[in-house]
Length: 280
Image (cartoon, rainbow, N blue to C red):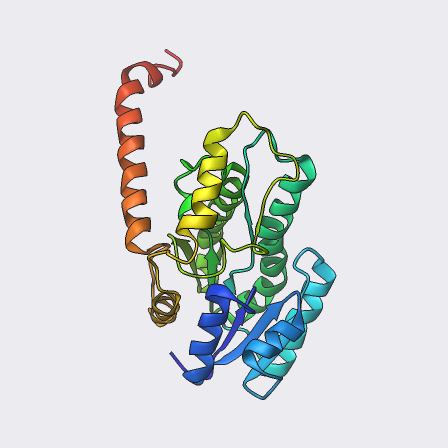
């Protein structure tokens, strides 16, 4: 892969996005990086240069997204790789999360991704080249996490649209990768990065236990190294015909296998009953 190709990374002021941007810049790639707060972005990665373009982007405002993508194209001449990384976690039972809290999570995690895609795909189709990485989560494949129902729903949506997108882009020579990470040691579970319900329901003790475990025990002890994850993404981007699904992390692989086994068992359990539904 030509090291002068341009990457667009959303949510690049922290976490995996920041780690990836740093590695790419160090390796000579051109990077357009977005964040809601351009000051935090510039503090982490520096001011604008010929190689680096920081962008203040509101993913939920499609006009703002369109303007920033056009800025990146004007600055670099093209966008070759897109990493839809921006998003946030929402923790709480389905019953206690308000309609606003749930919709806000979908606005960023799902519709923010769609806003990027709608505005970058015409450019990639015209060039008949490109690579899109949509960052989902192992929670977008395995939903067995009490307290993460809405977050998992947003990531299942990302997974579904990415699988469809991969088929839509084949005629145009655009590669698509669905990334399903496990637990990586970023600030994803820290205060300020994950949203809790404004109104908690006392009956959901199991949800509170999961919430406490994630915020106090798993946070800062995740097994995954974001530096290694970023290196994997860069390596996959060099492949000519990469596979669609990228489960990232040993824990993601174990959870994926667990889900496959569960679905296999369910298929077997209901097969004789559920397949007798065709017209005679």
